[in-house]
Length: 112
Length: 116
Image (cartoon, rainbow over all chains, first blue to last red; front, side, top):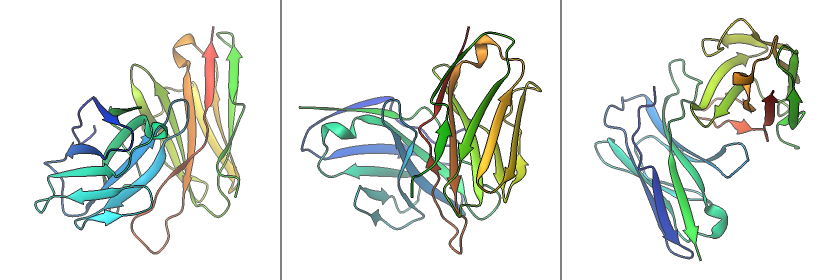
């Protein structure tokens, strides 16, 4: 079962920042937070991951709260091509699991 | 690199027929995953391999499904006999577990299977 809770859908205006929340209140010390997205009819695409520090790459920023019970994925300047389903996944990368358990994600609609 | 390659991209078959889906992972990757995606159940992990050895097949729905990885550059997912409820998009993904404990999976474009 997915260990995360995400809103089912969100809207964002093109050019504005999209802030996608994720709750993972049962996260344990060895578990990382991963974000993937799936654009319609394509395979999921890795975005970013983090353990406890905030992370940034060319696609997005990940803000993890100090208690690690929630996080926010930030797309700083959303474009129409960012319309997709965004999955927040908690993953133990030290002990077993090489698995990704996908939940239902957040459907982000970017409008002009 | 061409990324993960899956074939065919679309498959339409009749109930009872055998279906074989193929996957070529990214060169050098040592993990390979098979997923299935439907509207009802979302994205589900079926099975995954490490260095060509199946590690976890607990997601394989039933004995009609089988997966093999004869070498590092090729894997198949077979359904025999196929049923209409097997209609879904099947994704293959690969990854590399290097020195770092964190790594990402790269997904292929998927095979859309329709069983009539």
